[in-house]
Image (cartoon, rainbow, N blue to C red; front, side, top):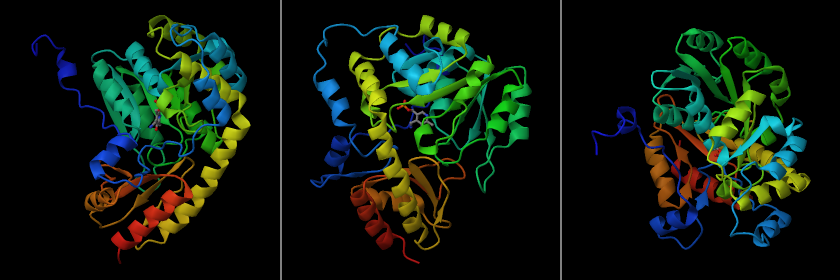
Length: 361
Ligand code: PMP
């Protein structure tokens, strides 16, 4: 079958995904729960109302609403834009994949600013496109606007994908930077997966530009990563095209029902977000006290920590042996870094005990 396979698909590198706690516990042979700080999930369960909506859902035998009418109405109220501009997906991952597929064909270019979320590269490769990576400032990870604008001026460039706050660096991009990118006329995708933690958004610009997309998710603030539900705020034409090409039932009935109740219950869920932001600051200070460690400022639910001159791959292995899972990157420029998701206080305590033993002066 190899010769029938599309050549660009044969070259795709699988996305480096994380694994769930039961598999991790099997691997580490531990009875004590693994400390899972590797995927920027919410360490707290969604509210009782959300869990009840899932448990009591009556129609498991019926397909979901392909038009997502109730969910889009709830999202319109939450995001302050009309439902005709909103489409939900099976996580924002599905929307990234769909957007790249409808704009980037074989030989086309997508642009991003690295280091960043790996899905942009993965989806571009699957579509047969080429990802042009414009490196961020190595000191504070700010955008190289000159480099980005230059990359977008190339004839094959169709789309620029930027996360704000960026994963794994935690910094945001400014409204001015987004406006300068919009001037190029290429599709500008601002991935606001961590919006509720930063409180910064360019959503209000969407109705004024026919080339701006904002992506959001219920995986982080609402604690619904396992249900897979994300959404985008789109120019109306792009929303209509996505609706026409997306798999009709990709957002399950349970995901739609839970997301609607999460929006209704947002005061409680945003209370948890405030706790995580508060605990992020405490964790950041404690990590900065480790010998030589540099903690980057973060507007999201994770921290990027650099351990200059240390073998961080080995440090990551030792943490794993102790049942502590954080994110290690082989990406150039991040080899001496760990990304640590904000967890519950007990997770932080176990992480810090381990790190204080492993990171000696
Ligand atoms: N965008 C960014 C920047 C992310 O970090 C993530 C999750 N790791 C996603 C999108 C994907 O989120 P979802 O669970 O909605 O697919």
